[in-house]
Structure formats: C-alpha cells, structure tokens
Length: 610
Image (cartoon, rainbow, N blue to C red; front, side, top):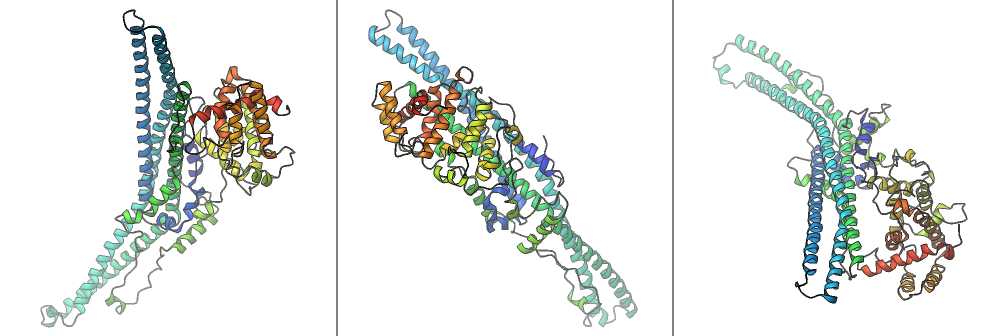
C-alpha cells in the first residue's frame, strides 16, 4: 500500500501502510499493527531537539537519519541471510561427516571395535542431534530475512514519498527567496543609477556632455524603472515570506512528524528483530547444550542482553542534536527583509513594507497553536510536539490512567495500585493475557515458544502500562490484536521485567536445592511445595493462577506441541532469579526448568485445585 501524504488523508493512510511494516512470523498471517508514533517519545521535548526539528535543516536531517535506519535494516537482513546459509552448510557437513565416519567404523578392518566403537557411534549420534536442532533456527532466520527485506522496501518507498513532497515545498520557498534577491538587485541597481544621475559632482552633467533636457528625460525613465522594480521587489518579498510562513507553520511540521514516525517505527522494528535473532540464537545454543554436557558460561553479557541494550531514543537524540554541527547549512536562514535604498528614503514617499515574520521559536509555536485551533482535520493533526505526547493511541482507550505502569513495577505495588475488588490478588495484565490465551490460544502450535509480532507486543505493553482497566482481550480483534503469540509474548515480558522474580530471589537457592539434591520424586515434590508455601501472599496467588493456566496449556499438548517439559524450559528462567542477569550457569537452566516442571506435575497437590 502506498503512503498518501496529503494533510487530510495522512492519518488513516499512514496507519494502514505502517501496519504492513511488520510482517507476522511464519506461524501467523499478516496482521494490522499500531505504528510507534514519535509523539510518544519524551525526548522530543528537549529544546535542542526542537530547535533542529523547527529549523530549515529539519527535513534534510530526518531524511538522512531515516536513510541510516533503512541501511541498517538491509545490513541486518544480509547478515541473517548469510547466517542461515552457513547454518545449513554446517548441518549438512555434520551429517555427511557422521555418515562417512559411521560407514568406516562398521568395517571389520577399519580399527578398534568394542566399547570404543560404541562410544564413537553414540558421540556421532549426539553430534547429529545437536546439529539437527538448527533446522528450526534456519527456518526462523529465513522468515526473519524476508520480513526485514520487506521492511527495507517499504521504508524506502515511504521515505521517497515524503522526500518528493517535502523537498518540493522547501524548494519553492528557496526559489521564491532567490527571485526576491534578484528583484532586490535590480531595484538597487536602478536606484544607484538615479543617485549618480542626481549627483551634482557628476562630470558628464557638469561639463555639458549631456543637455539638461536629456538629463530630465533620463530621470523620468529611471524613476519609472525604479517604481516598477520596487513594486516587483515588494511583491517578490511578500510572496517569499508568505510561502515561508506556510512552510514553517503548517507544511514542515507535517513532514517532520511523518519522518520522525517513520524513523521510530523502523528503529523499533529493527531493535525487535535484532532481539528476536538473539533469542533464537540463545535458544539454539541452550537446546544444543541440553544434548551435550552443560558447560559454565563466562561473565560476559548474553546475546539477548547485548541486543536489548540498543537505545533507539539515545541514538536518535545524538543524531539530531549533532546535525547542526555536521551540516554545511545554517540552522535557520534569515527572513527576506525589504531594504529601502538610502537615496529613495528622501526622494519619494512610499508605503511602509509589510512586517516580516521572524522565525523565532515563540512565533513558530504561535503559528502551530493557531493551526491546532482550526476546525480542519488536516491541520489539527500537526500541533506542537508537546501536545502530541498526550494523544492516546488509536488502538487502545486511555480513559482510565494508571498511577504506575504494569511492566517493571514490583508486584505488591502494582496490586495495591490496581485496587481490584477480586479477593485473589492477580494483576490485570496476567488475568487478561491468561484469559485470552485460555480462550483462543490453547490449540496454537508452539504457544510460548514462537515469538509474537514485536509491534503487537509493544502495543499491548503500552496499553497495560497506561490503561489496563480499559483493555478487554475477550475480543482481541477489536483492539487490533490478531496474533495470539503476541499475547503470550506480552505475558512472558511482564514476568521477565518484574524487579524481583515471581519465585523470588530469596527462595532461589532453596528451590534449586529441592530438585538438585533429591532423587526421590515424592521428596522433591514435598520440598518444592514447602518452598512455594514460603512465598509472599501476592506471589503465591499469581503463581497459582499462572500454573493452572500452564496446566491447561499442557493438557492440549497433542495439538500445541507444548508439553510440561517444554513449558518448564520456557518458564523456568522467567520465574526464577538466575538467568535474568549476567554470569549465570547453563546447568542452572535445567534446574530452573525442573522446578517449574515439578510444580506443574503436582499443581493439584501444591495448590488448592481450581
């Protein structure tokens, strides 16, 4: 879908086109997503940013910044394509090598037999299984490459559309200023001739080279030329200032908003895809580590931690703030003034020139304020950036604001802020997500294993952070959510961002010891049960609610392919302390999974059955 940037149709067509920026994963169809609007980012209130975005270099700076983002998308797409090809070659090489080695070892005269031969065959089988894990990794990388390539194509198309329209208006103002400068030069030239002609020291007149009649005739002709040139000069100045006023007060803010929206959408998608790649790579290595002997990792940050360290706002801030220093153009061109020739000030009374509109921040703000009061829907969209920050998303209602965000707030503080009448204290985000997943997602293959659409996850997070009580996921399509894996991703993200994990840091060692040092299944159950009973009341209630939901997911294993073991592997690191930070052990991941598996297998015993 093409982008239409006429003021009246900008909002709807842009949202439609932006929704196609983020193709869904291989497990779900194309979905409509809410774009990330630049107006929601507080950095736009910084005076240094606003000085640049309100200046004459704003459009060029933002176009260059968007081009950088698109180049980064192409680079990441190329890397992922090459990485997928390397992984396929690796899998095939391992299979060929294992096959040839197995054939050689089966020959009687090829070497040692007995225990060595059996051990070698077992090792070859382990290597093949570890390499085979990469098939899913390759399939996901292929889908990700196609999505990124499509994102780059759409970004280039949108950038070209905005550039063509915005630069045409910028050029019309520049051309008008050039015409005004030429008219000024012509006017001043005639005035200079008149001044010389009237100069009593002019030798040509003084010594009679020209008759008095000829001088008077020449004065009349020059005066007529001056009058015409001055009129043309005034008209060119008025036209230039009128076009510049329209550009600064109405048109340029539109294109600045469109470009910043495109930049933030592209950057957000790029960061999400980078994070998805890191998670896929981590899962590949973890799955392979469960096949071979676990090894202790270093204290270096994980791939996921490196990926999520991308700060889109800081990058955008630095690029825009440093734009004036890197630009060959001045921050703002001066307005075109009308300059009366000194000689003509005393020669003929002429009406005062029109007042020039100064391009200072206060005047620009007053222009945008007047535009915002206009009843026109086209102009009301392009108000001051500060007013745009309070504009609610078109997807979710924000009629009931939250005192604290749902994500990243301590559990007790969030439950107290929500003040729900329900006797069982479970946050709205957990109830809404589990309810929607129970209703629509139990038969979704790979639930909690497949990554949801990044922008839908971001939109859900924003909605739960701002107005959770206004959100009802019993009808997800009404809120623009058509990817059930995005709901699962939003639920996982909530537990991942808890300051203290649900099973608490205090009970971490006790829970790991309960499954690590106990071989008897019943003793393990009782020790885990004892540790769970020590949880704070709110943690206990939320854990009970979540576990019974996961139990319902596991009961549909034949359809969704999510067994208790798979759920334990996914939820262990999310609910426990280790694995959320740096320097954890891969061996601990298996113990964390075992803790969640034990709770799931014995949920009716550990908790009162629902």
